[in-house]
Image (cartoon, rainbow, N blue to C red; front, top):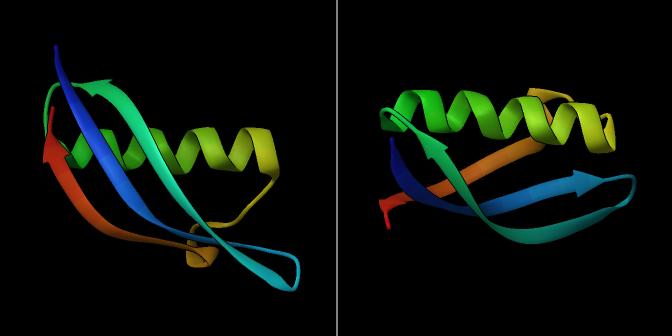
Length: 58
């Protein structure tokens, strides 16, 4: 598995926060899906509130 660094913004309530998250995945699309899954389970955030700015292989 490769490591990917995803950066972007997530809207939590009335505030927008920047994030940088490192995720293990086979490709970029799976890394994005994993990020949506993690934010959804931890912060209860819907996909529409997450904006991914960049995906880079670490």
